[in-house]
Length: 212
Ligand code: FOL
Image (cartoon, rainbow, N blue to C red; front, side, top):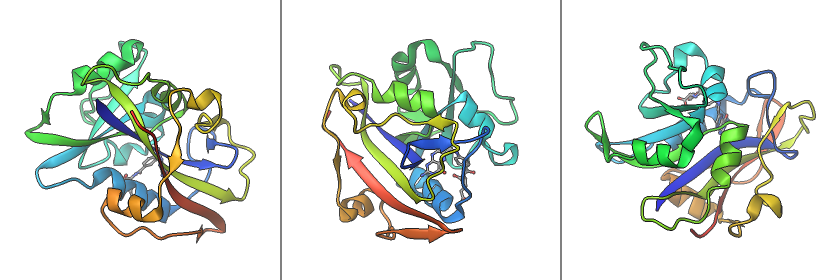
């Protein structure tokens, strides 16, 4: 199976966005995102997979996010990111087979290390709903790196991730929260434990896993 890791920052109400962007400004949190998704062994790259809206939400001068294979998923077969930005786009109609298509072992001479789903709401929802893998190459989300925004409430979000712990969001397996040590071991660097404060916002780095 191809293990996919979903990475997200979400408020307690699962809000993840507002007005086409992030509802908060958290430079250290964004640094964590950058570090986690970039870190790979020598000669390897990670792939980050995102929906079109998420691609368009990243400041044009920052995309594609560097040192990672950026992959954009769209329902519109005519949607291509401009050649200057050069991220391959894949058709949304068959998301699971899109992963097969992308899954060659090397891109630009670099072997792929990890796969990250970086949003937004509909890609989170669809990928969390992938069935338990039956073939060796089937993609499956077995890890969630969630930064839980604790306060304030961010009640004015207009996009939400699915509640992965609820009955409906957790049909195919039981999510359990990993220890902070396991989180650090997996990302490969020290991560501050407990409640973080930045710009008057409180949040916590968490990792959840489930069996395939
Ligand atoms: N997951 C987490 N934990 N936090 C996020 O902010 C987040 N954002 C997205 C998806 N998953 C997330 C989607 N939105 C950038 C901007 C918006 C964005 C994702 C990434 C961005 O500019 N990233 C740069 C900045 C790194 C830095 O500041 O050091 C990058 O290189 O990753």
